[in-house]
Length: 247
Ligand code: SF4
Image (cartoon, rainbow, N blue to C red; front, side):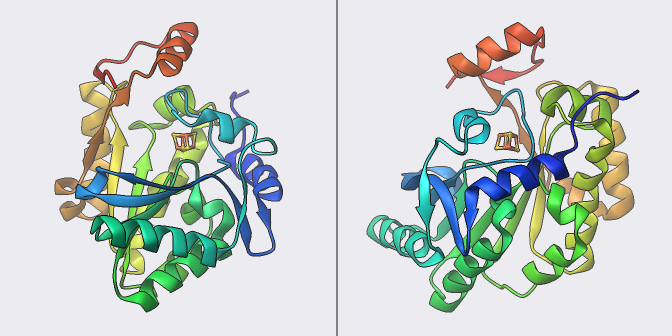
């Protein structure tokens, strides 16, 4: 029998903890940062995966203890204040998995769209966008939106080893790309390549080529950052990255 949890079920459990009406839990209201050449970011709590290299595992594993609830307006206002003060063009929700609170997310994106001031970067593992095609349809409404789908490895085996979820759910990550393509949403794939063999990388490139050859040029390579707690976890699991960076 294949090992690994079901991320749809885990995500639903987390959702029940981190969503209340149109509010969602965040462990950091806003921070400024250098990503995308400068962006304002709100960090949410709760995820449907358990990546071994995750740097924000506390709000992921203990969402009931971490953070506090914020309304979409509170999040938009915090992002707006930080971005305008620092002259940023980009705002994002990151930290854990933004799509767990989908209605809350859409309300924040709607406010960004109405403001006409920023591009909203949705950083997601894509599982729910692959599972539920209507998510891609709803996202297609927004001109201000760019989706970054972070693939956890290059194949089901790597996905299983890196996330703890059953390998068969890797297909939802790929399906997310297909759904976003079908609805003409702005997006690009990022791929965690620290643990991948050349053969597996080529296998993934082949699959992306079949979906849309232009996607291959847009792949963002991701490599693990060896924060002390991440390094400890990798050592304990006996997993050695092929390529990694120090923070
Ligand atoms: S998908 Fe992102 S937030 Fe969730 S466990 Fe993986 S790295 Fe952490």
